[in-house]
Image (tube, rainbow over all chains, first blue to last red; front, side, top):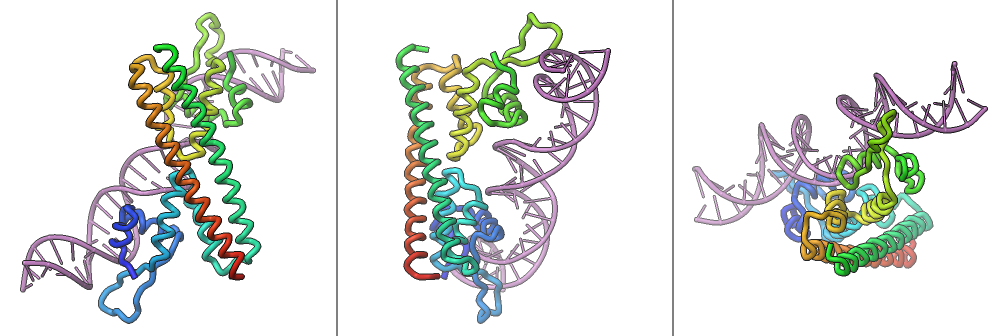
Length: 121
Length: 121
DNA sequence: ATAAAGTATGAAGTATAGTTTATAGTTAGT
DNA sequence: ACTAACTATAAACTATACTTCATACTTTAT
């Protein structure tokens, strides 16, 4: 079980950001009832995976609420298997389309490059 | 030469968004001096290309200021050829890394799917 | 035992990317 | 000629995603 500082070290995310994500419902930590002196929150290793998923998914243009939906598709017990699979398939489609758009942008940049090289503009 | 309504129709972007992008310096339109009765702005076809680039690049996580940098690398006359090429190469690297992250996210989703299918959770 | 570092919480503040509203003038269709 | 649709501009407003601040308590190292 890890404290928030540990999460920050392992993921490279600022503590305040991790707290913000937790508050946004992207994951939860646990309070230890047997420890009465403090109010610290403990996180298990699963949270590291979630934070890394958040980091990656964000950098390719997913919003936090899309990521939340994705995470819930896996971890939530409130939705059926079929609903989970359909959410995951939806995300896969979204990713395919993002890959297409990235290739499109890449093509445009390659074109710009060749133009810059051709004419000494 | 196109009016803003035309740009909106061709790109699918709201007029207000196009105005916002123009105000943000992502492109410029032209006022026609010979027409004295109105104050309309006219855009040439290049602007359509820019708007499509903005749309695609945004959807894969580029910020407006990153996109501006990219567009300027091509259209600006104020920077040298080598500077342009180095900016474009930088963007290509950024795209490569985004593609890697997308593949990573895809892998994670595929894994989640297989788990959902395996155990009937 | 005390100072430095860590944790919790709430609230306010900031940056980015728009969207909406208000006002006013212009053009096009009938 | 007149109405509907279009254009311009500025300012206020909104949503998302953080970041900073203030306060207070806890743990760790020396």
